[in-house]
Image (tube, rainbow, N blue to C red; front, side, top):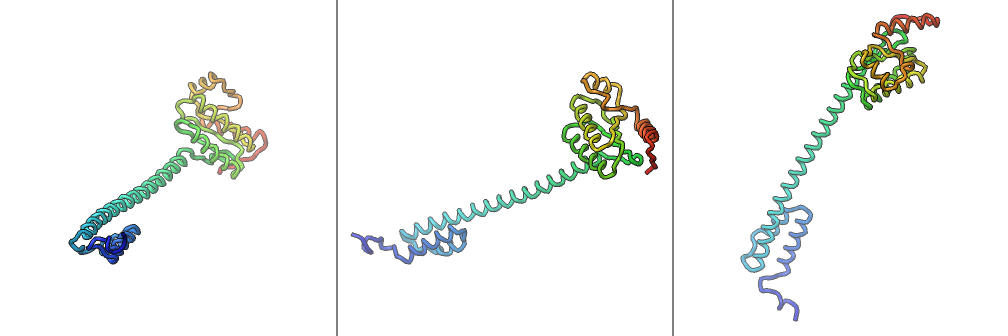
Length: 224
């Protein structure tokens, strides 16, 4: 048999509705409003259930607050990390700019001094920057100065050959200057065709060579 006679004496539809409303509010994150629905429970068997639910929702509210704090801290950390990464990238870009300067040594003559190892990333950046300058300035000559490159290995040699080839495709000539004797020997041992890479002792000699070739070809140059 069902009906009101089956309900415990301390159960009422009003109290059940209040319990349901508290659960609905809690599920929406409105813990304070949910706890207000369960304030001052009647000390009977149903009141024990209300008190248990009130304690559970109180703990759930605290846990939710801690989770929100953790999420907020993670978001702050993410923003700080993004800012640091942007700063690092800006510094790397500045270092790349400083590490691959291109100097207008004379009218129509560019000098690219290299310092340290020439890896794939740096070689690509230097080549791209150099080709842009050649296209903009219509330079006839490019001197790649290797005074600051202690060792030329197979990888570095390959990058230099590729760079020289790209320069020549734009109608300019690429010369190497400042190559150390050991590096020249290493290039020969690696089978690099030095005929593709005219090498001179210093930037001064490279400039003299370029100007001599220009005069022989009837090109008039003025100091920039």
